[in-house]
Image (cartoon, rainbow, N blue to C red; front, side, top):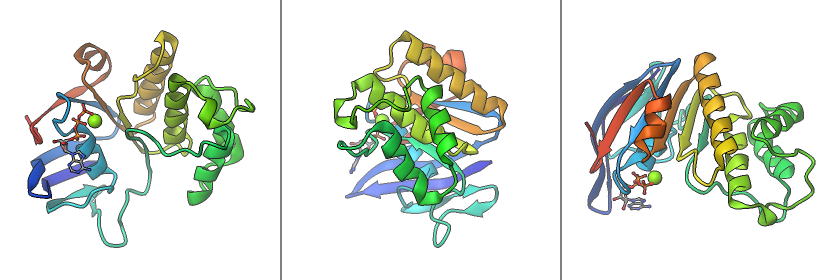
Length: 207
Ligand SMILES: Nc1ncnc2c1ncn2[C@@H]1O[C@H](COP(=O)(O)OP(=O)(O)OP(=O)(O)O)[C@@H](O)[C@H]1O
Ligand SMILES: [Mg+2]
């Protein structure tokens, strides 16, 4: 369970998140919904420890993020443009990322690629990937360690209908497994189809 308590983030004088209080349970899909610039991506960054609070805190299963607990123990995230290496293939990129934590095996990485509809042994370098292929690779990176918290910022961006179907299946599968899933999207219809709860974000506030 994720608990966000009185979370405020001020960047150079501007409050990008304002006193957020939110509890996110496992086995549920939360849909962050709001306009461009409303704070959806910032909220995702806060949940995975990528921004530090000016005030307040995030706790995961009762443990506060911060200090030596900088990041949630089990999180997979696709947030804006993932930093992949241009000169490496998709598989090589994911294997490099997998080395950081040493949790996902090569087999897990190959399975994640297959799941998002990428050919694991495609020799093309990342720089030759189409936009939709890049998005698929970003989703594969987020799921390859089978995280308990899955954060997908605009998961449907650049995906064709079969890709969108694939992403929706993955999101539902993680919910079934008991993960806490948070997706951000400005398309309300897409969110209504998937989310158990819609979290409306407006001007850095949750309503
Ligand atoms: N690196 C940054 N430094 C300072 N302010 C930022 C930074 N990134 C975003 N912001 C500001 O934080 C606010 C929230 O931005 P955020 O990216 O969370 O919006 P969003 O809801 O994800 O929008 P979109 O739908 O366009 O993705 C905006 O006012 C934005 O200008
Ligand atoms: Mg965003």
